[in-house]
Image (cartoon, rainbow, N blue to C red; front, side, top):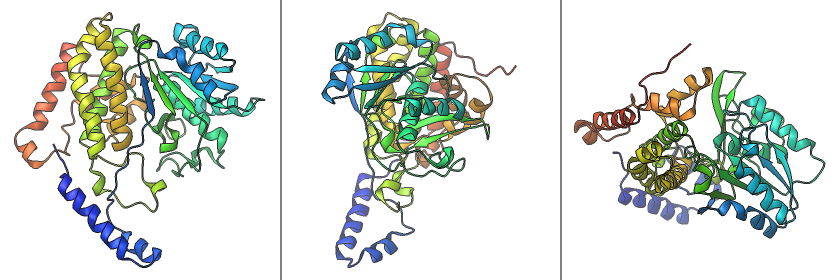
Length: 388
């Protein structure tokens, strides 16, 4: 697999530092850096708290922030389940008023995002913090509502990634966001990305910036204990794709040097820091996914997959993903389908051209595809998608 050697990275960094020290003007530094490749990688990650039952601590966290009014985002299905009741009880016990928005759309689109933004804007109280309880759809909706209600743009697409939108960077700090995932797949509790279906262009796109990241991700294995095997299966393949793609992404040293640190993309390319998290997620998924799907009572496997999802989120949230996700977007934007289901469909056919020539010559692409196929067969995953 492709790796930019640590020695070459260090040499590039030292060369830039030496020149910058000798340069006399800021203007000359900018001219020199123009057109050059990036030399810096950055880890931006949410704080993570992991443990059975930690959901009940949310009220104490917000009380320490002196929060009085909190918006809780969730979806209609989760609204009456124990995890949401646990959150609301904890908030009430700590004297915090909860305003519940429970109309999050699974696989959100621009319309559902704007509905959530409108809810925030119509509240008659000053919102001190946001709590997202659910899967990636809920957490991403909370991120967008937080951003757009604090820094309203002239046009909805101003913050949206190019080419659909302008990709304007988030201009300032947002409210504290606490993310409580109820699935083990998206890793959205760690990322600065919010994905949605754009009804105008019939495409899948999103908003990406480090300031979208949650303040704290509360990763509680009890919240995935009743996850249906089918959901555990496809969300597990989502973790697998996040891990492999972020590890094999274009190296950060191949990207243009940004105009400023704030313009360095959230998806900056594979780097030595993200690699650690991506590989850990890959190892854990290979070890525990089969068990997590085949035995809903396997607490160890369910817990391990939840942590693997978080680890993969830290990996791809800083490195990015590539062709597997890219190929999935046209499918996911046209049909109603589970995220993970689309990723497993597209991922198996892509043999990751980012591999080194040596790895390709030794058949690494075929080996990878065969291993993914074997995993799909073990879990009874179909090798196609029925289009009705």
